[in-house]
Image (tube, rainbow, N blue to C red; front, top):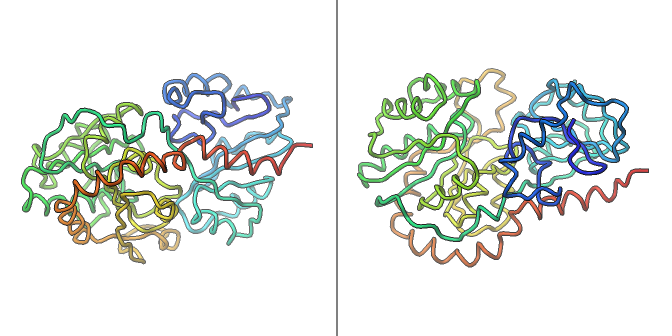
Length: 370
């Protein structure tokens, strides 16, 4: 457990801000320094050194699709708050019983909130995550990539993120626009990498989740090497600069427990953004952010997933429909992007960590520790 601020605690995590909702400007840590500092910050007090004698005013525990070792830590707080993002429709009884111990459960999307309520957990609120608007904003950078259209696709390569749909649509786009470029920011060091092989649109999966392996695999899927770039792991500043090279960002994700942080970062940068209309994406679409292009999703899935009932609420998008968006965008992209820059500055605060934590802390006020 790591002491983040006086009276506040959060479980040890090796991840940066993207996986640490407890990090934000209002926790006395400059948001632009989060990615660089989080490893040091959260390495100060790993779980094995957790002092069971300490009692915090508020204690926060993260959760996902199921319980893990971090959930075994003692809940030594006057008020206990669980914050979670998950992608399954049915929660294990053990997880439900664990969450029932908390004074408050914070869900990262309306979709997650409704699932929690359906499982009989009543003390649930929705708080959307935020982005670092000091880095992700519409301020332009010099254009270094020159192609007739540059398309950004982000997120770890796996079946849930829907990159197979992007590949299928992009290959067809090349027949119309031969010099189109795909920025495939897909590095994935987790076991979920192999799940992409379930798709009917691709063959197999990369041998590893690094940039070179993904690039070799992408070429084997029929995308010419000259038409794509696969960056390695990027920090926030690098990602923001790369995003601003794109004309369009696309996220045909089959499910998002939250609002998809990379998609939020693209929107904050003023990039027209395609979002599949399902799960956590629906909250992001309802914010009224300019430049969001909806991609319909249908149910149920036609994928050979084990435990299918847990994934029947996922959405499936049509690559041909996405291709139609690509083609329509080619005809209107300048007007679409330029007309939304000022609107993006005005809505930027609603996408920020500051706004997210202001919302969270206003909820916590009703839980004042006794």
